[in-house]
Length: 286
Image (cartoon, rainbow, N blue to C red):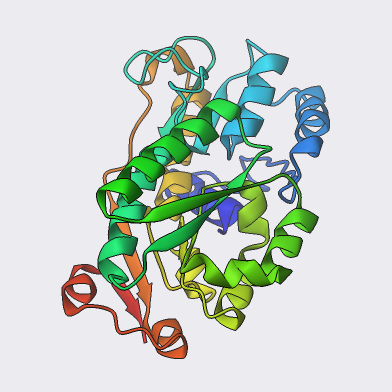
């Protein structure tokens, strides 16, 4: 998603430049939650002024590690629901930043899937079991409720490793799913290109959780702007470096949501997207 690129662009707009007045130490777990704790310890040993985290899981790990080092959330899904902050208006403690409210998106993604694919009657929801349980349960509940309202049967596939994901895609029964809905999770994002290719090979429309998914071949996505969230994280870092306390900086929610449709993929799958959905799209990939 260009995490570092977007964040550094935001910092540059605020007058910071690596090598001049900014030092950035970046670490990536590559979608493997087992690495979060070691990365947190490694970063905190460097005694940073601020730590920027990019997911619910590593935000929770970092919160367990320190109550003093300021933490800025880049793209955390539901920080109040997951107990990362006390409230959006008064986060308390040493953490603030962005709340993308990704759990709530499950219902909207299902709704748009039903409208774009009126012919389907069932879909598979891929869930990463390594994500915080509270988050996956809420996302599943909201998505399942929305599916029921639209007359869709939603089959939940709980997965906890890249190998399990690949085995699922090789299972012939997955072809009966009608469509694939991918819940927000770092592991899925690391495997994004692979999942998108597989969905086309399986002739299954795939609905992703950021605009990068249709760019890589998914049929569509509906989400807040992830690049904008990382740029906005720079605002929080700037305020903290200038003396503000995270507890005094309200957590922000997204103001912009994007519906992106890949029309090339639709043609490859033999799908005609209803005109009403195309007109609602913020971007159509031809």
